[in-house]
Length: 259
Image (cartoon, helix red, strand yellow):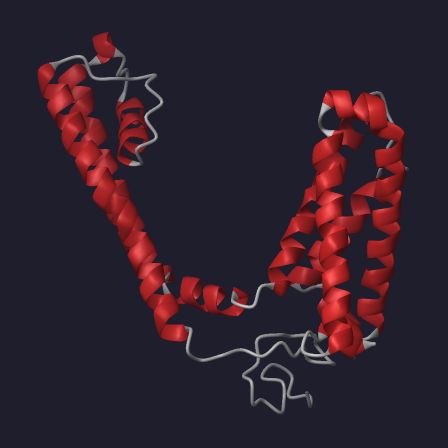
């Protein structure tokens, strides 16, 4: 059962993953369609039946995952274990929520079903490489974000001094908000400089924004190139369900169980 559910390097494991992927995509599509008023009015009953079908299928999968590992509590408290629980819990909770605002609460609970999409991540072959690269880039990106926050604080303060309240910059936080929107090239346009000096400063912020966007991309790309050659197998530990082992690993690097 563990080989069927957790492993992806066997024919039965790959088949199980493909079927589960199709169910996940279909369930997310049903959630999206149900949010469209016209579709909900016409096919609401069928979508609700489909939702219960998906919920039962994912419930069976969740129970089988707990049964097939040596430490089910550890898997239940892991990231993917919690995602599995969030994928099925809202539908069951909607049966018991009551009160004057019950309909609104039920709709809010049902929206949590979109968490199923996170289960797609476990089937991406490069997910482990990407997570390692993001983790390794953490401190560099933190320093970079600190520099960006300092820059927008300075630019926002300067714009507040240049433009003033008469041109919409009522406070320094408003100027910082404008600097963030401009630096990220979003450009809502709700606050805009009116003076020549303010527009000159805005032009500088816009030009700097193009360069700043490329920095975190370059940091993460360099880390991906560094760690991508290590290789990761698709084996999951039969005891703790941990993944991300080396291709030649014999024992789990987390609990030392034999793979």
